[in-house]
Length: 320
Ligand SMILES: [Zn+2]
Image 1 (cartoon, rainbow, N blue to C red):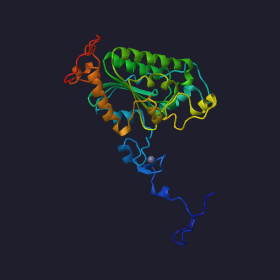
Image 2 (image 1 turned 180 degrees about the vertical axis):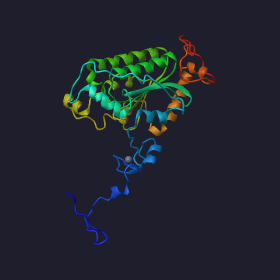
Image 3 (image 1 turned 120 degrees about the vertical axis):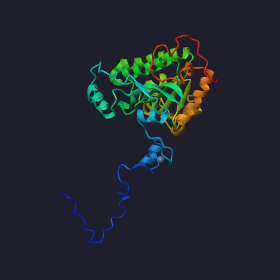
Image 4 (image 1 turned 90 degrees about the vertical axis):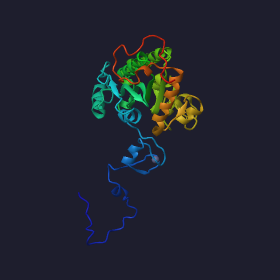
């Protein structure tokens, strides 16, 4: 069953026409081909550009931990709720059982669920952060994803911090039915309390942000930011087309389209995200003097119960 090989030392190499030889020139694992512009990019270079194509600006998808690495001040990250694991309440089975899927994705990602939450500093601003992991069942929001995001918001409220949530999700997790849908109300309720405490929420929409995530916390930001060309919407284009029986405008579910219509405040390319969020937090710091100024020179993260105020009187930030 083997193909006859041509001993090239004896016979001249036959002409196979346009045989693609590029693969041979590009040893696997060293280069990545951009799916948008077909450019080959040296992996190390791609990583140094935060997984953005230098030719066309295509934003490759990244893991939650890669994102946190791009974003936070070194050594400032402290993860919370990493051990909360989902359960298969409904004994849901589709093509494969939900329990099996959970196991598979837990193994694949090394995470218990599809969101990573914790406290850290961004350009020296203490922040509570939640980053959704799209590679965990499409970043879908089940009970634990909703719970962890809610806790990230409540942690921010309690400590008088801004909350940043990076969305990347296909929407609610159908395997958990109603329990999944309830997370929309729960996360929104927590944000309402955070807003009532006059604290900022910056929502960052990455590719893709859809369904129940768009329809709840992701679009409730005081500032809503997106990465370039991120797909953002509620229902998928096919469903919408079938339901409305109308031709949909070109690019109607992209960040650019939604920026023009005012749903999104800004589009920020990933390599500028950290610096720009830092500036926005500076501005917000002035308009909502946050308590954290008191802790600025102290330790980050761990909670003593005395390091924050429960009162409504925010402490004036130092140097403002
Ligand atoms: Zn490209």
